[in-house]
Image 1 (cartoon, rainbow, N blue to C red):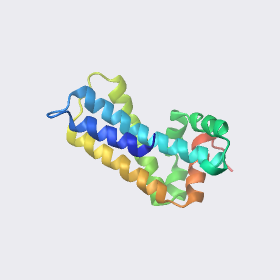
Image 2 (image 1 turned 120 degrees about the vertical axis):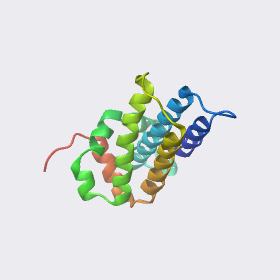
Image 3 (image 1 turned 135 degrees about the vertical axis):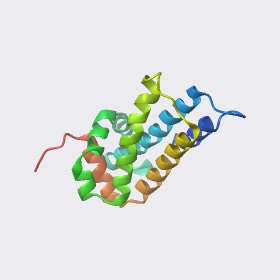
Image 4 (image 1 turned 45 degrees about the vertical axis):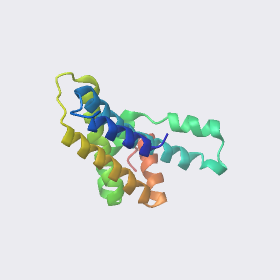
Length: 156
C-alpha cells in the first residue's frame, strides 16, 4: 500500500465506470486522494523515527506509522512556521494536505455537498504532485516536517 496506489484508485473512482461517475464515487475519490497524502506523511514519519526497511524493527515501525493523528498533522500544515521556514515542496504538501482534509470532511460527512469530476480530478492531480514534490524535498526537511506534524509545537 503506497500513496501511488491511493492515487490510482482515486483516479479510477473519479473517472467512473464507463460513464458519468456517481456522487458516491467522486466522494470516495476525494477521500482516497487525501489518504494518499496522509499515508505519505505516515511513512515519512515512521522511516524518520524507526528507519527504512533494512534497518528497522517492523513492530516499532508499524506503531510509529499508526501514531500519526489527522488533526495534529492538519494543525501543523496551517502553522505560519511551515510557510516561513520550509521549502516550496514542503509548503505545497502542507497546503494540499490541509485543503484535501477539508474536502474529505465534506465528502465523508456533508450529504448536501456536490462534487464535480473535473474538480475531483484536479484535486487528485494536486495530491499526486504534492507527494512527488514532498519526496523530492531534502531528507532533513521531510524529517523536520513530520516532527512538527507529530509533536506539540512549542515556541522557542
